Length: 168
Image 1: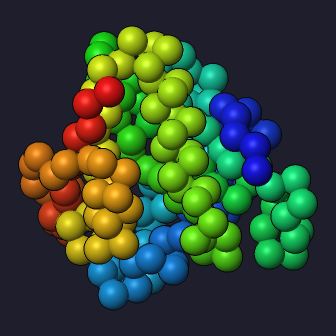
Image 2: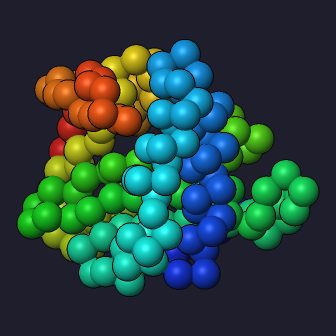
C-alpha cells in the first residue's frame, strides 16, 4: 500500500470510492437519493481537481498497485482535509468497502497527520455524522476526543455531526 497526495488524474477514482462508501455506510441514515445528491455536491470533480493542487488542502490517496481492477482501481481510499493556521481538519476519510479492515483508514490519517505536522499544525479536528457509529469508533480508536456536536445539512435535511479533536 502506498500513500501520496492526489493528482487531478485520481479524481474519478476518488469519486468512485466516495459513491461506494456512501452507498455502503449510510443506507439507514440517508435515502439513496439523498446520498447520491450529497456525493455529487461534496465530491464535485472540478472542486476536487482544484483541491488536488491547492496548498492548504490535503487530498491524499491510498494506492494498491495490485488492486483487482474489477473491484476497484488503484485508488482504494482517500482523505480530504484542510489546513488553517495551526489546525488541520479531516473533512472525509473513506476506504472502498471491499478493502476495509486492513488498516488503510488508520494509515491515511497517520500520513495526513505527519503531513499536517510539517505544515506547523498543532491540532487535528475530525467530523463525522453522529449516527455513523463505525466512523465515530474509528476516530476514538485513533485517540481523538469528542469535543463538540454540531449540525450539518445533507440534501437539505439537518443531521447531527460529532467534532473530534486530537492534539499533536
